[in-house]
Amino acid sequence: MLAHRALVFPVMWSDPRLDWLLAEFRLIVNESIRISLQGDHRSRARLTRAAYGDLSARHVVHKKYIPSAFGVALSVLKVYRRRMRKGKRTTTPFMRRLMLKAENQSYWLDRETGRLRIPIRGTEGVQLHLPLCEWHRSILSDPSWGLGSLTVVPGKIIVVVRKDVPKPYEPEAAIALDTNEDSLDGVVASSDSATLVRVPFDGVRRIQEIHFQRRRRLARKKSNDRRVARRLLDREGRRERHRVRQRLHRTSKGIVRLAAKAKAAIVLEDLMLHGAGARSHRMNRRLSAWPRREIHRQIEYKTALASNGALARAVRFRPGALRHDVVSPLYDLLREGGGAREEPSGVESLAGAA
Image (cartoon, rainbow, N blue to C red; front, side, top):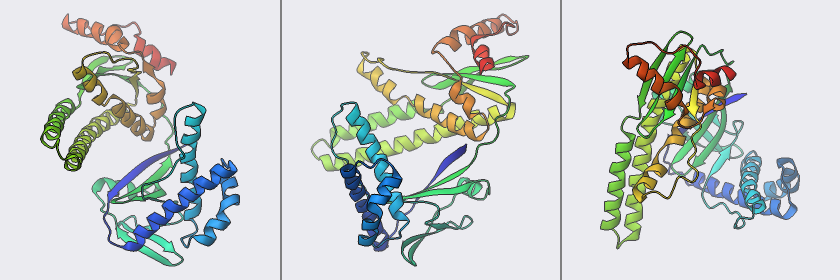
């Protein structure tokens, strides 16, 4: 089993050859979509037999880009066919955004300096320099991480790295976390002790409230100019997403580091909000902006690199069970000066079953 990570680099270029390559790759993807729909080709092998010869003759690009375009086209058609089966309204897919996807055999990357060479055709290529930070260097300098696919979109380059998942360790403790709006509250339980723990989100709720008020004020101020309003609102939303995501990364990194040090299984809440509407508009807005799924996603993929990702995905408890069965009794006992109860709790039973 492989673990994947995506390294994102903001890169601007002025070489028109790279812009032409992105447009040519988009054209190949759209032609592949048309050919696949006409011949009902659903695998890369069948699409390659049907379209590679014609596309290779008509498009003068690096030939390894054509199978990559087949993969992109088939992934787009997979979503289209799923919507058709479910009877949802849909139209024939068409890629509008410029992009390039290349496998690791197609490009060359110097992992120490960040120098990247993207071939155009034959021996012709474009060289770019990726801005490497300490986090990028810590991964690229590790030989256990291998290079995966390369994705190029205007203003951004994404390099996927992969490595074998370490062998899962046998957990000696459990960290059960209840997801709340401002924090993750729970308990760290081992065979001989149990401790209440609270992990704050570092002001995520306050940041969301501030940017919501800013967007509302900008929307009122620029209501007569939709073009300017759209640009300002996009910038405000992008700043909010970056600030929230950075704080969630710090929180999830600390939780995973603690779990790896204690060899503990992370138990998350199986939180679903289906049918949670019909409240006030303010509460519905707060629930929709609540980054509950993002913090769970970050914990899951980071624990996969720390050898207990399967436990973080498999061990869940019902909403409210942690507070009623574990946290409240522990809190009452601690207030009375006693110790933690010895009988197994619901969370300990789930951890033992996993």
